[in-house]
Length: 420
Image 1 (cartoon, one colour):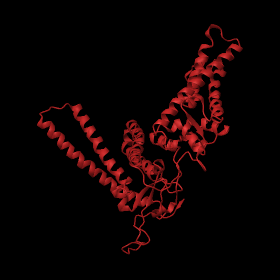
Image 2 (cartoon, helix red, strand yellow):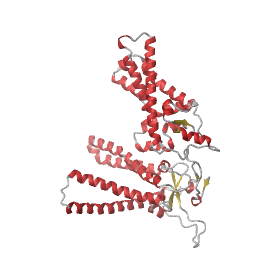
Image 3 (cartoon, helix red, strand yellow):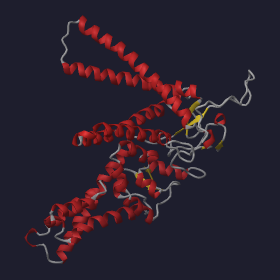
Image 4 (cartoon, rainbow, N blue to C red):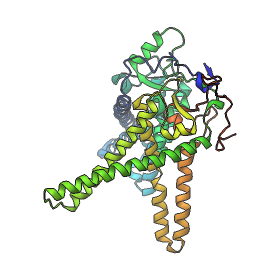
């Protein structure tokens, strides 16, 4: 469906990922991790067996000569499956000078890397759509409509795993990569990993099956501009800190009164622990209030109400409380994931104390520019990066064309509206 008017958004009846038996969000990553470990053991064992067979054929088994190459092949194969960096392990060992364990036979170092890619490509593009590890965990690797991956797509998916591991150092990027049951290497190959039961349910569904929720065709003109978002963010920030300060002050007074009334001499560590608990409590309370506002019939926080915007899900309906709460958590995680920038600036300023003020200014500027890009970087459909991660749209809440009280629909546009 195409939605030009943000007030005309209707609830979609499209199917979600699989059936009602879709596992919780934490179940699928756990199953994928266990399947990966199983496949790592299998590839490692195959690599060691292949190297042993090659040594036996070349009569190089005497004096335990095969022990180290076989162990090396197992380790490289296992690491390449689990962490997608077996090649880096080989290079690192060569640079460190461990030529006896890695390069005694070139075949022993290259075999696990080749076997890993062939293993995943052959199994995942087969009729079973799964490696033995995924079969054990009841998982399937498919394209969007539940069909088989091509051999080339399966190879591309496995090669791209190193990109997933590399960018997963930043937790927010990992969240972006893991959206809609896809990591970065899944997206590159156009693959989806879901449970065997859900894939079968989708293939049995009448019409074109989808492994992911169908996204509403919301026009970019209906989405809120950066100006409205900025106003809403500033207003909500003031409200956020007001609630935190109010509840925090009340709890501090109550805690001090209780300690004084009971004549308790608290240890400094206990006080720090209580203050930490108090900080988490007030933050959780405030975040819950904002989440409750966004999943209510208002579909907006107080700041968004003033700015004339509201939040809808990707199917055009209201988001749930869990979705709203997850958005608050992911936004906080995005903020924290940029802390390494400040850490690096601190280390550099310690080495160059004369440039300390300039470095700190540049560091904080880079920090907030990066955070602003995460919140405001917009795609072609009007979603920002954070919106896409949270599977939602932020749209303008325009007045209807006619109202009971005869208020003109073409009310003046706020000065902060983004015309672009």
